[in-house]
Image (cartoon, rainbow, N blue to C red; front, side):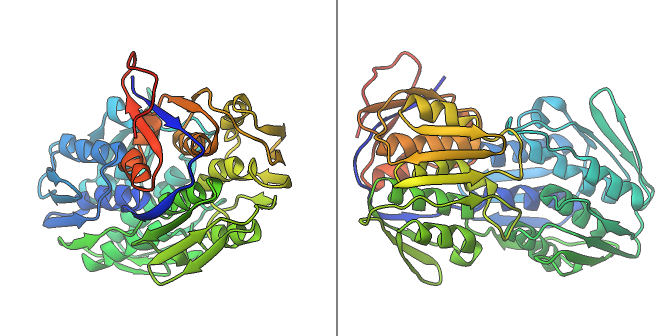
Length: 425
């Protein structure tokens, strides 16, 4: 099993280009099975989750050609409407094929999803919405089974904003008979990107990016080309990497307007930022100040940046309180940060960080995707060598992370189990 070895204490300097957004790419790929016609998707990140979705589409019968950051998909014929456990268990986003399969083919059997162990993320809102649209939905032996001759438009209210739920229902409604209104919809930029792709293909969708999305169903969609938006969480991660190492970095090909809450909090912590249309310059030469953060659905502070900011606050002066409101099991990285010398207390849904503390390298274990990123950032700032185990989590969501960090001057390498302990520049 791979591990990442980091020799820390080096301020990062230089430029890095941001990859396409994993969380936009996955629903866009799933949506290609809504119709035949060739779809060409570019700026796809080469991460495990995207490759897994490509495999799933192939199992369903779609023709998938994936080369580099580009995929060509033709779902003119589908040979199966079942998404098997072996694939779905590794990636929660596999549930996104449920709506498209049901809407186009009248049936779908999808294994209950897996993914990161960050707390309960039930799919009940997906299922309740599909049932309102006329589907017969049941749970049998760990699988979701849904049937409908043709879905009907419906008024759907989500008890809580759900990103994958909004995406699943929006895709299903694109081919439903009549008009569907999704209220209290999630507003993430990735939902807007999916809607833009569907509209290119002939869907009638208005309101994506607001809490009310209206979809007027059509009989069929056609193929189209699409360039996936830049990844806002990768952008945030490299901003924090520059800040925690007291460096100066420039992030190219990003969307600063997708990161308003994070940029505001970094400035509050004393980080100097210069924002352009598709570029952010960061300088963290000044002392960092402790701040309070509360994770919220978009446009609030993203829960996917919580672990990275906890790591950053160990380098800030004073007490910081980070409150997690989205997932109940998302502080598993804290115990590993303590092993590196961090002073952090967990009080229910809050992490109280006292800083600055001098982190020292240690063997640590990643528990989920964003926790992995937080530990990498801590390792970049720590004195000595940090070994991060179970980095397969990291590979699910970050493209060429070690290579990009080395380009900024970090001493970081990937090693196979049993390899020498020293990092390589």
